[in-house]
Length: 131
Ligand SMILES: [Zn+2]
Image 1: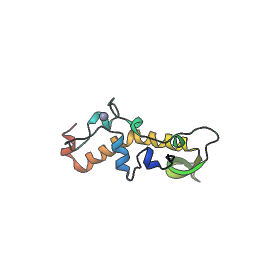
Image 2: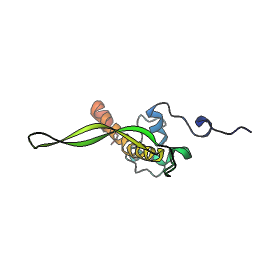
Image 3: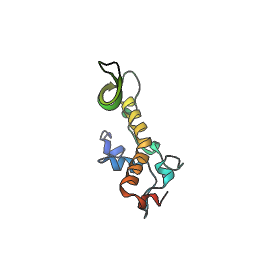
Image 4: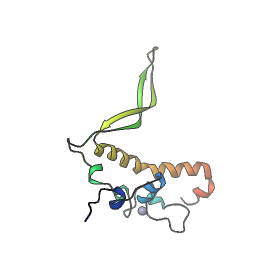
């Protein structure tokens, strides 16, 4: 019997961000949008814990190999005139894979509601009607 080293044989491989998000929400069925409770993460049937990760991806032990990744963070910049300004900046991180995926899961918690509020802005009344 051959060992299962390939990710696709054990857990799903997500090609698009949408696939990743869909995994953490209940199915839409015939509806155009996900339920508000799912999007707001108050639904007890779905959530980021539905995301299947490999053991190596949740490894937070000191022996786990470091990975380089980037995330946007707010940085306070001091200007010559003494004023401090907050700026969004891409920051390079080098941590174990566990920290990277912990960060990803945190982002996924609020992403659907941010995405839905964006749709509210561009679709207007149609999206508001489901609230
Ligand atoms: Zn749900």
